[in-house]
Length: 347
View 1 (cartoon, helix red, strand yellow):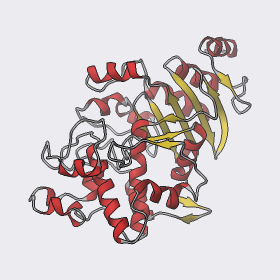
View 2: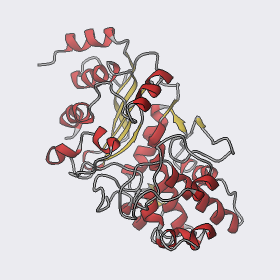
View 3: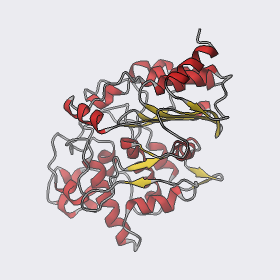
């Protein structure tokens, strides 16, 4: 049994600073914080019904410090699409070539839909980083047949090119991040500390956002609430729900969101999230935004939970990960972290 004294000792060892919401009388909170802190973690925030039941910071992290969420950024793309669908700008099943003339002349690219693009089954692959400029992504050749799952940065940058054209044609600010801010972030009271851009000035839609734990949790609460503000959908409800359905090629990946579904996708990123072997033990409605360095946003509507975990990812660890083909080896397990949290707070 994990006792309070042991939790306190581990917290001191790894420099965990707790807030009032993370009471020392809560062993489950101490376990979550200590597990995270021992693996470069800087923040853990667990909210139930939108109220913090556990909050703590470690390894120099603070409540006011924003950290890159890396590929956790990918989860914003589907919400952009759901907002754009409500605004009449697109449908997920329209061909990408409707907006991109460069794809119309290619008989394979011409058939690919926005849904396939964002579910990473279009055939467009490449490295997961760095993110190319929008137009450079559009010009990239396909690296597999349509229908194969390939985790890469380029598809999200192609989506950026689509949104840029659609917004400009509608007489709006053509920057997809500004659109996301106006349509979603501002209505939910969410502030983004920064958003990295490519050398050409395009937003990195696959990996660019930096957030504090509390601000990221606001997005999780928006998702947990079904894309609504004050009971009113601010994005298309049908498109929003479809973001959390996997593809035949990878049932564990929706539109920028990971799902606890059994699958045999061979890529290293899917394998890194070790939830797929525990489908029977996890809530079927749990969805996860995940980024390099084990940045995580877990949303579990049936448990009324939103859980944020952030970690420090330095240049040395990035270089080591690239040398290993993209996998960061630090002993992190999503299942080992989230299962005790669910056991303690899902009631």
